[in-house]
Image (cartoon, rainbow, N blue to C red; front, side, top):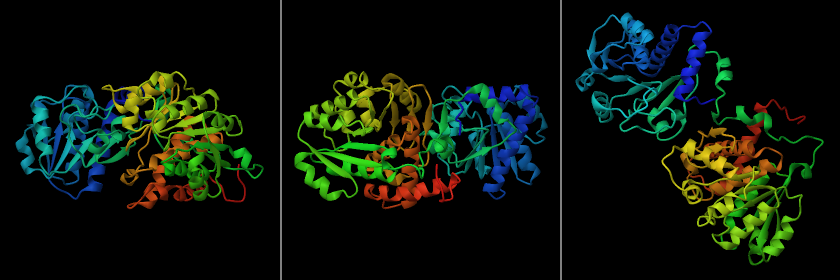
Length: 493
């Protein structure tokens, strides 16, 4: 599940060559994989292979040769009319026996498929000149596109379009994905993504030590806190959710989610005037009233409540700030969301200086900006810098949620459906993270696991999802994970 930057992918290539596999062989395998993916996806049709001056262009010549060998009508257009000069790419360009034409917009008139082998992830600047003109023309036509490695014009490390960028229906990449394959807008420009094995051994990752990954149970399943027969509810932690006075639904959603994901006990601390609302609505979840910060401190003083949640429905203002700082003073595990973050917009350093490594922040983009400010960095970089600055795990939410740890490790979540974009779903995520932390999962792995489970639950429901549906969907996701982990239901642990 590692995500490699273009520079790290170059390291992987070089390490493979050192092991005795030539660059020519790697390029042959890459181009053949692209051709095979194309033949699986589309019926035979006239195809234009647009080849750039570097190794991405070399891949294109291999694609052209394999498609032609299978009876496809293939045109090759070379940017600026020149064949590549890099040795491996030049070797494969020489093996192409067909005509090579200067790449022009006019070549698109006779093509029903474009293979974009111009630059892939290897270009560190915006497209310009003939390349930009050509890609702009492609974007305005309804011609299918298969991109080699990445659509040209995308920054492989960030997923950002550098000026104009191609839009692909299929992108074939090699060995491991890049951040641009999973971060928007790049992910939206890649279309379907096929990951091809071209003979690079996985052991080369040991020399690279990647720090970014695509979220998957493969990463965190061994850390998941399944119950044991010897255990009881007190072994599975106690989550305390601080409820708000008016927006009572948010804290209730968090509490239910924490219970569903396996926390042994869950309590909502409710403002005394709202206590009847919480108590009437929650079964199996304890509700205890508080009148002021003093009485809430008394609730905090019970060390058996090992994870605290503040923010969902809390209200923005001084009272929420006081609650957050009081919770931080306990040194216990803490999940902060929504109003708990926004309440510090005018004085962010007072929160940042009080956070510790057992905390998780779950901002959406607006809340993130209020706490950390704005800059031009990409989402992965911003989340990492925020985690390092705060000393806490940061879950920067969105269609490409990034979970970042203070040590630089980061995970990008990719299984979230569009149906999650509805009010209250973030409160459910907060509760899932807290519930897993209460059971002993580290803040980082709890955030990764909860984000994936949250999205998987939404996917199972589909259209029409509202936040109230999510907690009840969690057990089905957990049952599937439990089976995948090799449990048969007779014993656990």
